Length: 496
Image 1 (cartoon, helix red, strand yellow):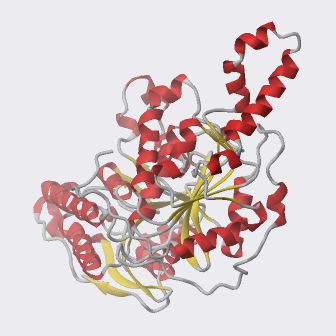
Image 2: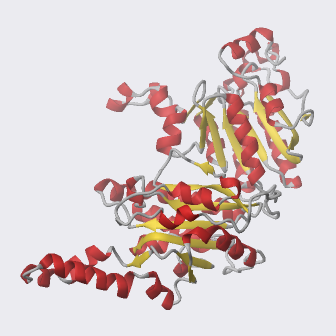
Image 3: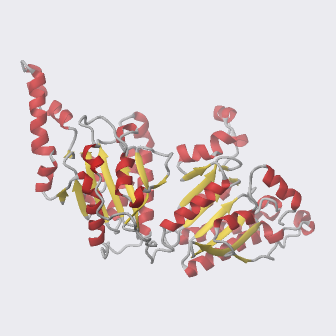
């Protein structure tokens, strides 16, 4: 009963589930086995000797999701506000040790008032040891944080060190510093909504990968995500039975690219056309919408998707999109998930804000992530592929295994129109018919430099394919790459 019937009733009135109800909804029925049920604090300072703390405010244990082993801990806000003390942290740390030994994912349901002030440095010690374990577990087992209440101050490092973070839009807050502590003009307008809401962290900071209105929907989608992931870095993701035709063609793709190079189209239509049962599990859907990342299945196996979205910012890359792509690629590479990129990019967004935000640094991280990844990598160029942005999007030049192009693709140092305006600036000024001359030179440049056939002749494209047949061609390429082994120079780790 945690903190008692009255506290539980208050939770339910606010539309929240209890710590144990969350675990029950998350795991397969009757699969939960609790560990550390009778652990409680041993502090006697500040009247703590008189305070009961069932399970010390956190329920820990293991169970199954679709029959696969998963470890879970759920903070109980009805017990001392779910605050983190010495034994609370020790329970979580012990769970991490077990999960690492078994090579199984760990899921955290976070709902805590923060550090338990009565235990001071002992609580900080517990936090630090948890962060150490999270750091060591990174890239070894999937770590998922689910914010269903407060997650404030140092506790915010828990989702920050996780692979994926879920958050509900009501009753949940995530922030480092309370708005009451923010000084200067900013402090006057700062509220919990402007610094700590799910909307802020899913749209602006990028901390939250998935946002949902209700806890039940949120928890159900955590289960869905786990179904796409391997248990650890030494295993492959589970393979599901495929009812969808592996050789399915989609004639819609033959006409989806507009004739106007600057017109937009929805890249998610292309992604769903590739996917088994046309299902896309998108990650960070509200952050940096000009780049779409997420999971699909091809021939029953999990594949990571990275695709430019021309409907947002014209599909141009920027610092946030580069950050989003790099982090997703690194996760896929760590957990043996093949990557398929879909390229339609004219360059990087040009603005003072982007330069100051560090577009060069973040874009370098995107290049590094693609270049450093050793999983199978397939790229499909559907339209624009210009300049250094083309290189950054999983090109052959930085290590893509297979590169396909649609006949609509244009690969060049820049837009043919822009190139002609630069190369023939003087001729266009003095020409009696500059419009005809420009059109002639654009057509000439497109044929000689930007045509996919010209680029394929140089070996930078492996094949030019019919758009409708993209699904079966990508599946065939991944089947060929299934046993790929690629060594990197011996080193402790990269520094980008």
